[in-house]
Length: 251
Ligand code: PEP
Image (cartoon, rainbow, N blue to C red; front, top):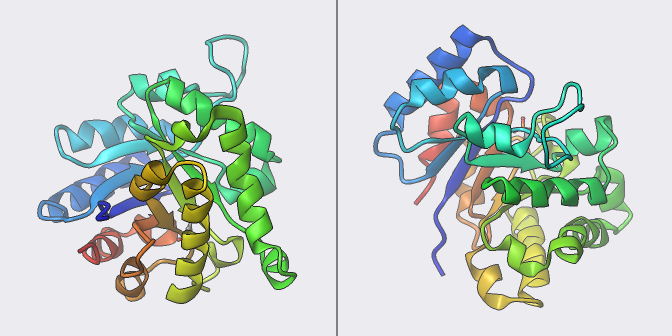
């Protein structure tokens, strides 16, 4: 089964309007022959600048989060899936480990957001991953299973049909420590097996991205793994050269 390679950049809380425009221009200019499908996820205030700069480019835009409420209303500070779609997004990251650990998002809250993203016409990029402590105490598979199952239990396995999964070991995010290609493959294969146990067809087409200190130097080996279908890139997505270098690892 050949799945497309997807490379998504998560800018986190970085940038300015000028930076967003410049970086987007550089990425768009360098991505013309990219074999990877590229997604940029800037902070909310810069979504408009990025969407406008991209124009009719094939690069798509995503939100880094969305509200846990379906309808407009009195939810100060929140941004709904419908608003993201309205401004030109096609994707939304849900359950990033920083949302889970810093903002207390439970797997159930993440599952609600996953469903709301889909309802709004967005492709959810569902992040799952274990901490170092969980890995070292042999809980990696249980943690991944619980985070994934929360979504399947709430929405059914069919909801993964138009979704992206991202394995992001917490210990590798922004730390410079990358999972080895074998560690990434093992976790990705486990995740795919969990989905396959319920629907093999969906499991076969489900893109599973790896995230955690991906750089142009380690991307080729990671992306060469059977079940690694690209990357969710934090730090290295803030430099066009690095982001494009990672994208060029797509075969
Ligand atoms: C991320 O923010 O999802 C991430 C993987 O960050 P980094 O690439 O900086 O480790």
